[in-house]
Amino acid sequence: MTPREIEEYTELRSTIRERSTTRIWVFAAGIAAWAALDIATAVLLSTPLDTLLPLLVLAATFEAVFALHVGVERIGRYLQVFHEAPGEQAAWETVAMSFGAPAAGTGLDPLFAIIFGVAAGLNFLPVMLIAPAASEVVVIGALHALFLARLIRARAAAARQRAADLARFQQMRASAFQSPGSSSVRRKPDATIEDA
Image 1 (cartoon, rainbow, N blue to C red):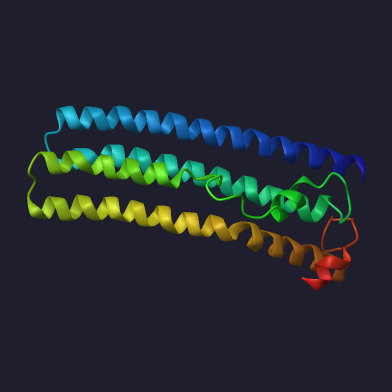
Image 2: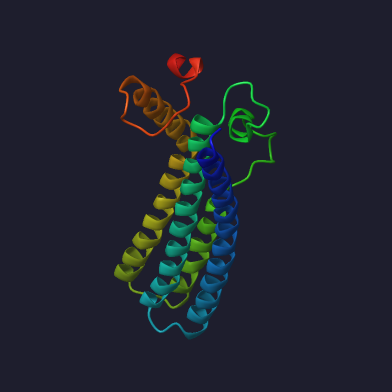
């Protein structure tokens, strides 16, 4: 590897570490802020619309967590394609991706989607406590349902992301070597890339 490639690899691994840690702190701080607003809403609720501010905080927190997760995964696939060679001992991204599904009950939820879903349900409870008009329940309920649908779609997208990003980076790497001068990538393509 060239000094530039070593520096790039080192910086991108650092970025993964920092963003992964940031994702957890954003989640914890966002849930704490949401919980404080939700409790205040439950105590001081004057109109069902008051539940929308905590829902907005919940949605913003989720979007930040999701963006951080997507970025980390994308950087990981880049490193896998452009910095790891088949048979190398130091191939964390390749090993992590090929590890497969963990044993039942030990899987992680990197998006914290279940917790966000429960929080959305708890956020809606104060609406029902003040006997709102049917139209208020429909509108506020629809907004909460929209957030739940976003959680489901984001979770499905995240489940497909590794394979999709890996295929895209492999395609980019292969095409970079088919048309000389179109990329600054200097490593030769692996035989496995052509098989993909």
